[in-house]
Structures are given as C-alpha cells and as structure tokens.
Amino acid sequence: MPLPTEALAELVAALPSGVVVTAPDRVEKYRWDRSQDPGTGTPAAVVRAEDAEQVQTAVRWAAEHRVPVVPRGAGSGLSGGSSAVDGGIVVSLERMAGVEVDPTCQVAVVEPGAMNAAVKAAAAEHGLWYPPDPSSYEFCSIGGNVATNAGGLCCVKYGVTTDYVLGLDVVLADGTLVRLGGRRIKDVAGLSLLKLFVGSEGTLGIVTRVILRLVPAQESRSTLVAAFPTPTVAAEAVVAIRRRLRPSMLELMDQPSIRAVEAHRPMGLDVDAGALLVAQSDAPGSSRTDEVSLMEKACLDSGALEVFVTDDPDEGEQFVQARRMVIPAVEELGALMLEDVGVPVPRLPELLSAVAEIAARHDLSIPVIAHAGDGNTHPLIVVPRGDDAAHLRALEAFEEIMQAAIGLDGTITGEHGVGRTKKSALPDQLGPDVLALTRRVKDALDPDGILNPGAIL
Ligand SMILES: Cc1cc2nc3c(=O)[nH]c(=O)nc-3n(C[C@H](O)[C@H](O)[C@H](O)COP(=O)(O)OP(=O)(O)OC[C@H]3O[C@@H](n4cnc5c(N)ncnc54)[C@H](O)[C@@H]3O)c2cc1C
Image (tube, rainbow, N blue to C red; front, side):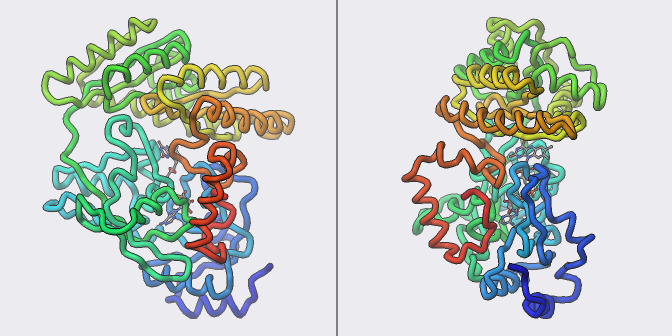
C-alpha cells in the first residue's frame, strides 16, 4: 500500500532538515546492495540518521504507521539483505561513523556506519588489531559486519565478527534502545541476547553502537603460494594442512578466478595453474618457519606443482590483494549470482567436485574462490548479460549448489547471510522445528514484521 503523503510529512517534520531524503534520484542508490537483487523495491524515503535518537524517531514513526524499515550500512552485501522494500523506508547508518579506541580495556567503541578499515586503522594507532577482515573491508561498515556476522580471510585462525562483539546498542522494532554487554571480557548475566542480534541481518533491531574486542597487533607474516593441477587437489592439501594446524590465512582461487584477475589487472599469477592456495602464518618466532614448512610439505605431498614462500610482507600482500580482487574481476565477465556455501573442512574436495559437475551440466562458467581453511566457498555463477537462457540455467545451478552443500552437512551461507537471495533453501537446511523457532523469535521481537521484511524468512 502506498504511504500517505501526510504520514511521510510527519517523518520529515520529526527529524532535522536534510535527514529524510525522498528525491527519486537520491533514493535510487539506496535500493540495491552488491548482489543487484532483481526483486528490490523502491522506498518512499531514506533516513540518513546522524545519531541513535534519530534512528529511534524513525522506527517509532514506522511502528506507528506499520511501514517496513530496511537498515543499511554501506550496501556491499551479497545476499540482497539491504534491498529496499516498496513503500518502506531505508534507515542508512552511513553518517554515524565515529570510532573511539579504549586502549586500557583493549576495545573500540564504534558507530555502525564506520568502515571496517577505519576500525583497523584506529586500533593500529594503539598497537592493537581488529582481526575480522572481509575482502570488502575498505568499503563495508561495522554495522553491516555485525548484522551479517561477517567473516573474511584471517577467520580460519582468528574467528568471525561475533567473536569480537562485546557490546551492542540496538533500536528495537518499537523504537526502544537496549544496551547489551559492555567493555567486559566476561559477562553471563541473563540470556545471551547480545549474540542473538549478531547475524540477524537487520530483522530484529538496528545496531547503533558496537563495542569490539581488540587484540595485540598481529606478528609479522610469511606467505606461501602453491599451484595445483585442479581445485580438488588443492582442497585435499587444505584438508591435510588443517589436520595439523591453523594458519592465519588459507585461501583458494581456481583457474577461471586467476585468469579473471590477470585480465582485470595483470599481477603475474600463474594462469596455467588449475588452482592456487594462498596461505599465511603469523606464528611467533621460529614457529612461523615450522608452520610454513609443514604447509609446504602438505601441499607437495598432496600433489602441488610448485610452492613459493616469501617472508617479505609486501610481496605476500600482492597475492592477498589478487585474492581480494577476484569478485570485482569476475563481475566484468557478466552478471554474478554469488554463492557462499560452506562445509566441514574434510568435505571441501567433495563440494568443489559438486560445483564443477553442476557447472558442466548447466554449461555455465562458475569460477570458485574459497576461504578454504574455513570450508567456506564462493562459487561465482557468471550470467552473460542479456542471455535469458543462461539466466534460467544459472537460477537452477544456484539452488543445486545450495542443496549440494546441505547434502554434505554444510551451510547455504557461511558469512554473507541469507538475505533475500538464499532464503528459498533455508527451510531445507534448518528443518521445520528450527524454522518455527526462528519465526517465534522474530514474532516476539518484531510482532508487526516491520524490520527488514522479506529478509531471511
Ligand atoms: C568484493 C566483495 C568482497 C566481499 N568479501 C567478503 C568477505 O570476505 N567476508 C564477508 O563476510 N563478506 C564479504 N562481502 C560481503 C559484504 O561486504 C559483507 O556482508 C558486509 O558485512 C556488509 O556490510 P555493509 O555495511 O555493506 O552492509 P549492507 O550491505 O548495507 O547490509 C548488510 C545487511 O546488514 C543489515 N545492516 C546493515 N547495517 C545494519 C545496522 N546498523 N543494524 C542492523 N542491520 C544492519 C542490512 O539490513 C543487511 O541485511 C564482500 C562483498 C564484496 C562486494
């Protein structure tokens, strides 16, 4: 139902000038996230909040008028989580970007719109480190990271966003602001509500402040790059490495990904390799050499064609940059349907074989990258622009890859969230009882279903 003009006028009047944006050309950029979800809607307005109180005002107004609210960070999401809803409002947190480091407690107190990179930079000024590092760290917000429980490259050793969230301020669906957790390392008072909001994809509340645990700055790193004849052989090496140790990074790129990066920006990668592993160790002292030697042996024993090791941080960073560049590089080949399926590490080779089989059967190009040490893969289904038949085949492949992961005791999403693009497969993963429990939690916190309707459920 379209929003009555008087209701919208009330919202505009309740907030300072310039906070509510309704001009269609300005609203347009708040409709999409990076998944380019075709089902996205057109919001009636965007609230570019400057503080938590303004978020509360907007949500109270939305509750009163039963208007859908889509929280939005930087819009780098890959699952349609911040796709707009027709006639709703988008609450953008981009202007709330403060970062304050408390070195004594080793925490950062962060507004949700701050970029992940800004938190890392602020922590580094105090010799501290905020580990979670999505490849998008320079252009994704902490609020979005919390809402998706974002992962990244160093999670294999250092864990994901939730492992660093000590406190949250959250605006609930009725506009109440609750303060959960704090600067405390340990706190078991009451139910673990804090963690309920991490990964809730804006469906349970809007995060307006985050307290993040920081750790001492990372030790220097050694980088290992190994070339393999096929992705499955590379995955066997990952299983062998993870059986013995937990490196600080263990990433995989298959040949189409390597070639896409080389076409996008030549970096001297081995374009004839069937797959590359990029691994790092940041173990202290001589343990680093030991870890790298173990990884090198595991790669060679598993069938690596070539292994290269460097202790030069800049040289190592070049390979990590190449890995981070894959999604933008593959985006140049066509429209992407981006998967995020994960499995227990020992089943990674089976998952990669399943993806290759699905790609061949549907005659599609599906380059694969993986946070391989976590068993989390990103098959990138490429749809040549304007090719409707390929689009239909891609839709089938997208579902089949999620089903393949479920069949391997895996997950339809390891780090990007369900959003709107993966929810068709959620019932198959969760089963009826867990799905019903999820609905009960949602209904209890958001009885009118105004918060990010259509996402997850
Ligand atoms: C090239 C590229 C590489 C990527 N690499 C990774 C990676 O390695 N690991 C990874 O995990 N992700 C990765 N991503 C995905 C994306 O960057 C993450 O999901 C990120 O956490 C989204 O943050 P955002 O600020 O852009 O959120 P948005 O896209 O704006 O929103 C994402 C979700 O969070 C909700 N949300 C946002 N802010 C709030 C808030 N303050 N309160 C409540 N809900 C909120 C939205 O409603 C939506 O459901 C990548 C994306 C790209 C484009």
